[in-house]
Length: 454
Image (cartoon, rainbow, N blue to C red; front, side):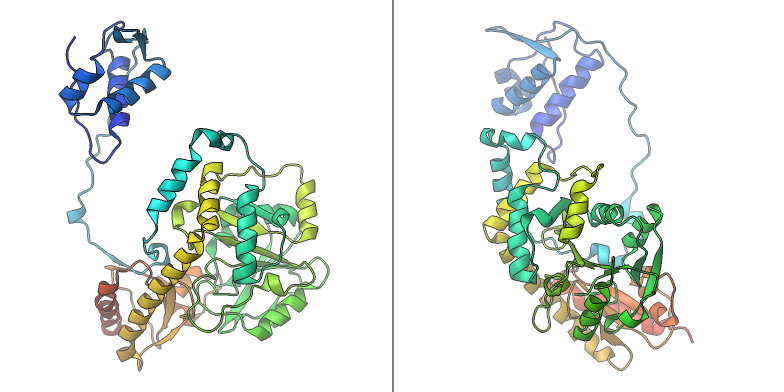
């Protein structure tokens, strides 16, 4: 019996690597049937690994039938048909040094990675304890009752949303939940903000649903310009995407009045309402609605972290009845263990504390951005800075974007582009470290002002 020798990667779990190494040796015939494996003590000493690591790897190989054990004797290779493993990737990895490093101001890279990871580790350990084995079973199709209860409580206290637990549906994304809405309203004609969230257009096109672009100005969606054929309107009233406009009180009243017509509904997308920096928090349209005409939707992508992939929907009671009667409901795509982590995070009060901490961090970043922009006040104006993780820079002239900068224009999000949108830049600041903000914003503006098109 030869001692097994492998090279380990410090960034991966050791027991997983050891399991994979031995498994590949068995499948490729390097370890033959009935060959005895080294004892846990000897292999641990040879590889400088703990006996616990060896034991976990051996146990996994045993559970999957790659090895068998003889009491008081040791572990042996099971009779397994050898196979040819997939060839290794021969493409040389790209060398980062040869690439031009771009400075990013995009919204996608505008999330600052500050999060109490230790709490999620604690909750994850709880979720996988033996007494939590029920989480391995299929859950409620609308989501865990405990999580829906926490969402209801949070929405009532923070956004003024009035609903029951039964009205809440949890999904993996805004895209999935918006697709569900199109199934509940199969004959609707949609009106969507232009410029607006491109994912909404994507879903409507994929589902072959008719839609009409809606005009946006500094007060948000122009209600009086809504098309007479449209009966469902999608809006981002707290912080219009991407202009940053906040829907005025007058427009809110007009929109709610519009929704009182037969078969009319408002889809309120409240994606980053937690991060408001000026004035009092605005009450959600859903909380002002007295006729069950507002469909409320939001996500944890901004309030927890982007990869959490959990969103939620609050259906008006008439649509909830339609949902319950729907024969082919979409499957719940959020694992119950993830739902458990979020539930515990909210129950402990850490969810709201984390939002408050994060809001302060983003407010500090915004203040640094505005301070940096002050010397350029005669050249550019700023809008959309009441909330969120980006603001809009408005230029009086056309310009060419430098190649070493990643940044979007408002026109990138329009269907019927206007010249003013081509002169508006979306400055995402959330992902830039504080000490770099002044330098990067100054560098951007100096290049744009020098490169303006005459």
